[in-house]
Image (cartoon, rainbow, N blue to C red; front, side, top):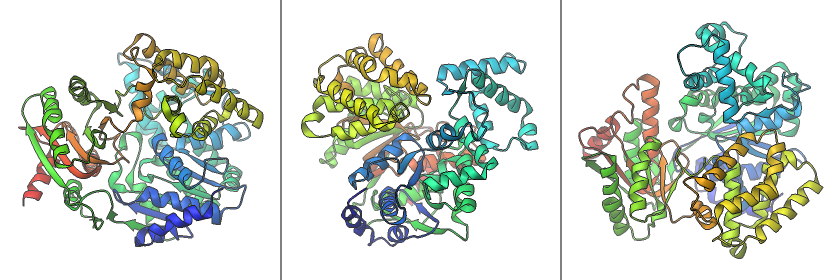
Length: 591
């Protein structure tokens, strides 16, 4: 699958780091506890390459489960750099994708999962309809049923075994709502994203043969960001790896567990890492941040994990900016004062190397307005981005646009990458070599005929839809939500806020020359030369009602934002109301 020289040569870089080298040489179950900037993705990528080359004979392969599509795409890109393309031997995707494509779709009938023939994944509109009907079915009331979507999801994910009294008695009304909601989905011949891991876990628990069938295909299971993946994935790991015989290689960090609202629980990672039959490898050297930032991040976390900056890293610095006025006024200060000062001190830092990070997407609106008024291009990766950044379809469409806007000339991206990502995404509708070849033929013709960044984005998208992807999206059971996302964006380009865009502006959404605007949650897994933490006020982080676990998680969220920075961290807060976390870091640095 790859040239042995590629991963073997690259692995030599791991020798100097004892933890990375031990993880790379592990032979049994292994959990890597990787702090920020510790090179965990590089270690994971090289370990995957080695296991594919040395430990797994064709046609068997490796399944790698990660938190979101962004993480999956990064792993795919890194493996591609080692000459390894995602294929039938290499699954890389979310726990939802793994559950759907590797368990539910192949085995729904034989495992008697109770799903209707030809079921599809529900769109957001269909979910809302099912929830409205379910709420009326259990008696209704004055509350807007859509307000129950979040607590309903939490309840579904937190109690996996519905045969227990815990399911029925913890919240009888919520249990009834969940069951009514799922019944309404089935009447529409639909499942939703929460269904995917839940259905998979139930089927695996009921059928030992199903666990062995998955083991026959994937003797090794790799898990990235284990702390964020919740109880369903943990139950799969327990069954696959410690009952059925699948080998585990997991990477995670309990201090970066920030998705408790989706069911993530850092204790699950600790449970696996503490097992006697698991080799646990800590990575404590930070290759990202300067020493002063590493020290300050220890104060931000409130725990000393023994992390150190790597030799040769710049010292880095932390700046505090108490400001008066509202967020609009503070945003103008960031654009007019902080950003120019960063670039004056660090002339090699471009605007695309800087991120402004904030607790909630609406806070980013003030920054986007200030940037637009100053003709500073921005790339938002929060809830107000021009399209959901976790959409695999839209990221592929953006890749196609990049190829049309000069990529065909410079080889970035390569057509092979564009085609391969399309083949993986539409694999459900491209089951054989003939259909795959025809897709590639149509794709290269479409892109070649549209190598012009000045064309109207709406026209380009409409042509892409009608000539290439409409039939594929309509037929694919797993892509209906992606189809809705695409059509929603197409509508915005027709008569909405994106109607003015040309193709090159859309393709530029991945351009490095844009100021990055993102929430604390969305910044996870990324790094920037300089970070401005904005709106870090008490009541925003932590929230006013945060206590217990929520307060601890809010602190971890602050820590995640802090540790995105390489050379400079700037903390902007309302002068009379700094976050308690800001106050503690500032006082400890001063002392």
